[in-house]
Image (cartoon, rainbow over all chains, first blue to last red; front, side, top):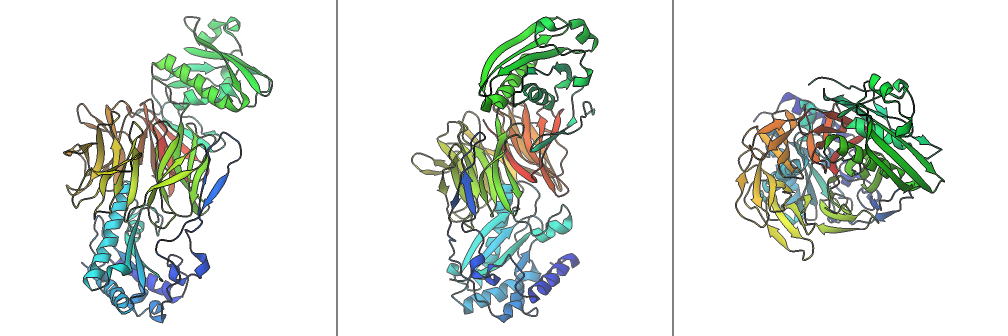
Length: 192
Length: 411
């Protein structure tokens, strides 16, 4: 299936972005190890009728360990498929499009060669329809990429999947362009 | 639908309400400002706003009132008949700062008599609740239906780079954050006693289901299996939580016994089965499944058994939610790019489309069964709306704090 011109534009601009270095705050491997989001970032409060609210910060630990992944320069080389970290999908589909097969293959090869590396495949959907169904759609997409990697020989222990459904859009908007860019799986590396 | 009763938005602390459609047969009612010596809360203003918000009544502006009577004795009914009012409310509030005495009378203008009269006491903290209770009494007397003014709503909002689960009064007042995270929060579900909320949180970087006690904020993580942990739904008897888990390979409906923590698996197979919701008698669970290709609604006995497909019209039907009396099922009803709230009459199985889309979701019934709260989007703004079950009355609730979604009306 040929990729639409608009999606090619996205792929190319994604390459340009990664060429700039560590500006992708979605990819924790480029962040300083002290800046991980999610730990100690939840708090709860008792409900009362007007008196002060006391929250307790909930500590949390990352189930996947979480130091920076120490990725090499090939990950920011625009000529290298490893610099592409997002796989896009057609509406209602979890099939990896032909144009992204080489991207998945490149990451699979890398993982096979580097058994200490671990990826989290984050599945997403566009905003239309109900939220929990969209969580399930996102998971299907993440698993689709995972299966492709495993078939190529990547060990199951190096792959985790998570789905954010429509909860973490890459682009806001209610049009075809936004929807296309949100139907995606993000390949994010985490160290052991 | 005629655009009757289009009012200017009424601005409250956190909530601005626009009544976008009203019913032609809105009853003219006058709530005369109560005589109140410096009470911290304007009770009659709250009653006026509550009644106006239902779309059932056409409330008289204060400037148009011929007089300001406080008791029925002071009312010259001819003046109010001339002002074309069917009903009026008069009252007074006396208090000392800690404790207040409130008196009100609901009067039939043409019959020149009292329909309701109450005297009540309230602490200073409870004045808003008392006002909502007065609205409930008036509403029930005039319509024969139970009011929904005294409840609360839970919803998810995003601001400041994070997400919050908030609980507010049914009129949007007193919003309080009960959980917050930089990671997404989803799917709030009230326990039947209104004391706890179950919800999904991604704070540990993957989905988990929590049950939180509202009074003190304490909570317990009840499901964190590999894969999806989602769509918690409390059973009507409060003993079980239906939920979606994909730990066995694909998303399926499970029922978690909260006492024993035993898990009962209701669905199996390769399709996506999610978004469980209980029938009011607790015997069945409606859920979304795409086993037929696209999402449709199915019903299964809550103890397990055979699934029955419920929806056959429309390309996409998801997120079913039963009315409190079990007679109706609200859902997200979609066709291509257009998603609206549909209401199925369970007797005839026909679906009535209640809203205008294009991206309406998360329907939640008011406990009196008369209105459905749901989430909407216009451009990039997300807000809550309410629609009556006959589709005739629409209200848009806009929270000033930003994007609002996934409402859940307390039982």
